[in-house]
Amino acid sequence: MKAAEVKVIQKFLTSEKLYNGKIDGDRGPKTNKAIAVAIEKHKKDFPAAYKSWSDTRQAIALLQWLCLKKGIDAGIIDGRYGPSTMVASEQLVALENTGVLPRSFDDIARIDTNPHSYPMENFASLTAYYGAPCKSKIVRVPSPWKLRLDWELSSTVSHIAIHEKLADSLSDILEKVHKEYGLAGIRKYGLDRFGGSYNCRKKRGSTTAWSTHAWGIAIDWYPSKNGLRSNESTASLAKPELDAWWEIWEKEGWLSLGRKENRDWMHVQAARR
Image (cartoon, rainbow, N blue to C red; front, side, top):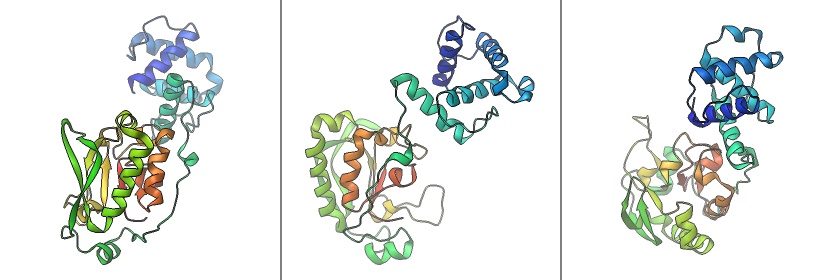
């Protein structure tokens, strides 16, 4: 379990006068004992088999129960830390830290338009529209703001390498983003943290399928906070304050994997799914 989740549990146990230790995210013997007492106190809400569960499973079960008490769907109380529990616990932690629930993925209104008739993301369609992967004509589009490499913030770039067919579209997008957020907003939301664009490589985990980066039609933004496994609760670019950022891309026909599939929130591409 994550320290932030344990802290939520410890705060609850403290409010129930079952725990008087530190709120430190460390699930030690004192916390485990209090968890067992709390479950016993509310045992009507837990499966009868809970007494045979390990300390870890009881802690997860209490976490699930706390989610449900706050109206957050964590699935059944089974003490298993699966995808539903993970998402629900992230929402619970956010609620405890901010006082409001983060919006769900279903609440995000994506703009689905394709004014430039970008192709579907399959090899035949991409090759017909953009040419062969790794052999496209790549141009350098200047950025209105300095881009910091996300993995080495002291290093900066001033241009983005992109397929020649996307140069005008990308230039328009960057100018609109600059106008919308200004330099202060761009820095505040990490829109200056660049993760790369053109890269002649296969998809992660594949030895046959080409990445859209190999055509120079994809860009990664702020990957350290918006990685492959990010979702609407964890990705910095999923915040409502960044809706305008994505809408600018979407109005040009670019696709956000985060807004489309709730994963890989760093990635935007000029190809459809």
